Image (cartoon, rainbow, N blue to C red; front, top):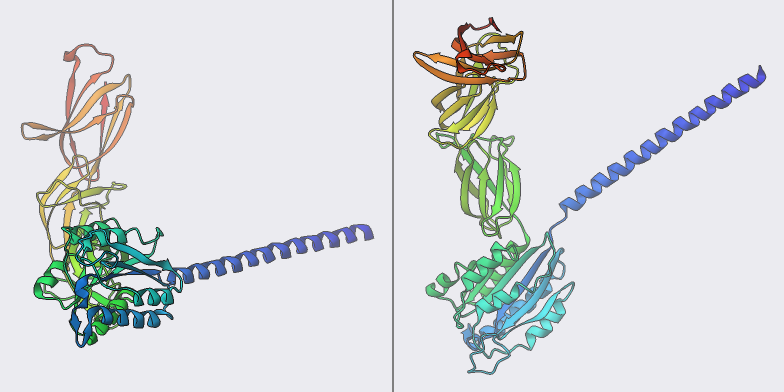
Length: 478
């Protein structure tokens, strides 16, 4: 007896130890998963790395005067000052490319461009030293320099690649800076470049508007200010709000996803589900001002707005007409449909917009729609109007049931709806089955059939029948 008791105690202790081990391991796993989750969240919130390539004009015209000094002296001083201020910035790498500085004056060298300091961590002093030695000499080759700049950025996904072009002249080598910039942006190599124009005119500005975001800097003070603005844009987000406007031009629409794409590369940048905040206003969104956006508001049908520019440091309001109402299909009575659906198309369009479930409410933009109800037979409703904040309701009768039974043999059989003297095909019955149960709309019908084993057309038979809402109709084929 003592041995038995001892054994039971030992077993209980063993079970307790097993239970403790199980809960201990499970707790450790939970803690590990929690730590993993939060570390992944922190990682996701880390600032995206930005690489800035400074493309400096060192053509002969940079000896022109700005204030009391030459443009190249001012540009060198501004870049040196900027390198000192960027030392404490996180998530940033810089590089320096120069053009027009190696060929002798008077020689039109359209390949005179060189990456002087490549991208790497803490290369600010190296850039300062190299900038100090640069002397303007040659011509202005912007297109070729931009093209070569595309190779300066390391191939690393998830990095913002930015070019800051500092120049006082337009293209002199028959290149097309606009086409090169567009190509680099479309392929996702770089984001929209910044151009700082020294001593520029209206003609100068127009020449660079297609290249990137242009800024005039005709004085040293303006140069200093513009350079700070450009770097701020390159490194920081700004705020915006999207007003989804109803038919009264009020921002009352909400709760729909908005996708923001880079206009040039087509890359998806953000997804935000539109929200009205606690103050009753559209919520504030952080957006990177360096992009030009295409926004898709995923209403039914979607609303697209292109060429959206965000003003850096300023709260930008984006207005979009997106008035919506509701649409619903109701089946009267105690429906026998397990899952009736209907196709929604914009009026006079063949493109399917949505396949919606009956008795469910869905939002659509204000307008007219054509419906194809997937019942037997199919029902078509043309020009159903959806109005602001109202539910357009389409009703169809409660269906009946048709039970077709073939006792002795299988049949080829089709169901037709009788529309005056015209037969409208409804469906074909499977020749392999001898029993058929169909949920069908009320009306007058005809079944035309022939035995599978019959080899003469005059062995075809037909029978008329009527379907009533909520009732079953039985037909026996013999």
